[in-house]
Amino acid sequence: MEDYNKIEKIGEGTYGVVYKGRHKKTNRLVALKKIRLESEEEGVPSTAIREISLLKELTHPNIVCLEDVLMQENKLYLVFEFLSMDLKRYMDTIPSGQYMDKMLVKSYTYQILQGILFCHQRRVLHRDLKPQNLLIDSKGTIKLADFGLARAFGIPVRVYTHEVVTLWYRAPGILLGSPRYSTPVDVWSIGCIFAEMVTKRPLFHGDSEIDQLFRIFRTLTTPTEDTWPGVSNLPDYKPTFPAWKCNQLAGSVKQLDNMGLDLLQKTLVYDPAARISAKDALNHPYFKDLDKSVLPAACQHAS
Figure 1 (cartoon, one colour):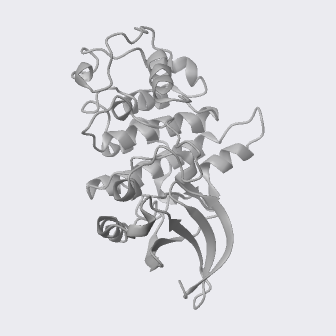
Figure 2 (figure 1 turned 90 degrees about the vertical axis):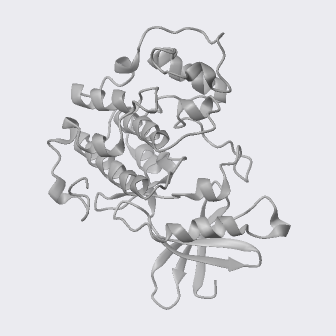
Figure 3 (figure 1 turned 30 degrees about the horizontal axis):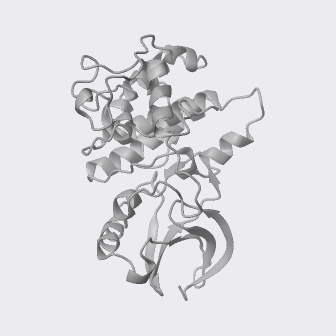
């Protein structure tokens, strides 16, 4: 830590306090994330350190760069490149009655998918995507932050400040207690974020796991063995769930054109095996009129 000056506290992440800092030699601004772990006296688990070290390999224009991992007095500090704005705060600045520019929504969605594809190809899941950990710069670039932290540290039910970790972007398989999940959980989250960029409102804003599930079911209909093979075997599935039968998704995103709605529907397919992949989503016709040449380098074609 002696290489960095802490400038100010800029927020509270899922795992601890986040500071704005400056590298003393280069003057570069950084974000310093202090990881507060449950078992403070035991120090940092070696598995967490191993997991985190792997994340230094994830270099991509749409992923916030992890520059360093530091230990100080049993605390772990993660040093990231600094970006001053996140998508949630940006959406909050848009005046009432106005919406995000349609091409910006398209560009951001494309870039988020690029970043997620890069990680999925390297077998890294995010598991906790939300507007608060999508960071933006003034040049129109959006970057995914906090990749892989969920696997290294687990996702607590509450932030260390006791604020409840949001369920709004969580895939239904996780909410139903599925012990096995993979890359489709991130695609579901991206669908929810895409819809929120369009409307400025969270698509499913539940305040408990059951409320979250029921909001999803009300909008997309209650899943059945026909629409989601195996759903009735998931640990928290109940045959007594109310049977909502009318799909209300189109009415929830009236501002979205038909191509956009088609992409959104494909990201929100119940059966994870049938949900669109990040790679296929990047080739969806919704993005046909997006000028890929102005996107950050390496984002120009889905590999």
